[in-house]
Image (tube, rainbow, N blue to C red; front, side, top):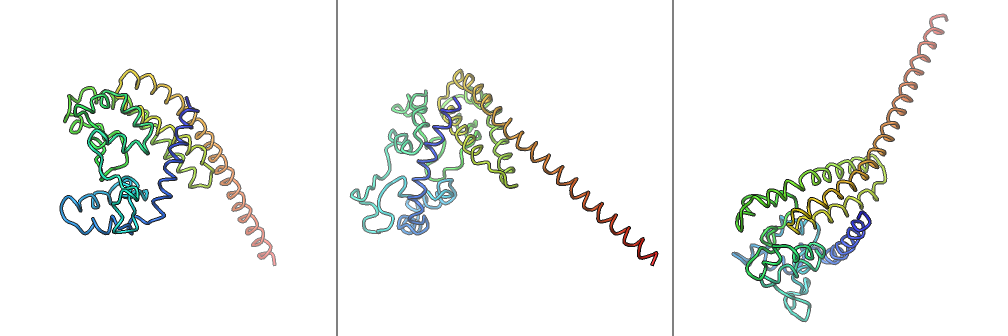
Length: 269
């Protein structure tokens, strides 16, 4: 299962890199989309203000990455000839977002949410919003949002099942970041955790309690292996610090002894 997580993570990384590269080719703040809509009032200008606060904006993903078109030409910005696809219909949102979020789309469409899409079931925007999209977290599972469609009890059970693993992921990511700051090569660990987090987030969208229970146990097992690797790094780092501290202490002690010897000779003279 860990291999599958890594493959999925690699695919997501590649897609994200391609998308990010394309976005950075035309700086988001310089696109004609931002320049035009940013100066408008009402519903035509709101998306820009909302987008500026989003995780998309933070990662250089701009209007044309989702809606298509030419972000360098005012006249052709919304031309189908330049790839403009506009705004999807309600039922078309999963396909629209699924161009990047491939795995999540698959799990969502197979879920009770996805199967109810044609009769008004929730789509991506219902939980994540459209332009003010924030970094996903389990806080998206909350009574206010979930109770718009049904009783919160089932959603609360889902959140309860995933909260421990989610906390473990967050703690391990912080540990890896700390190791990186002291100069340890953590690229492989970062890739493993990135893959695990993406695969784990896919699991949320199934909204299937039994599936979540069974697969969460496997995620916990995979994370225990990653935790062991991180602990090994931390132990070795601790040993290095201890050895370094002893070495410094010996140098200081040697300096003190040398100073005392020097003073002793000076007094004799």
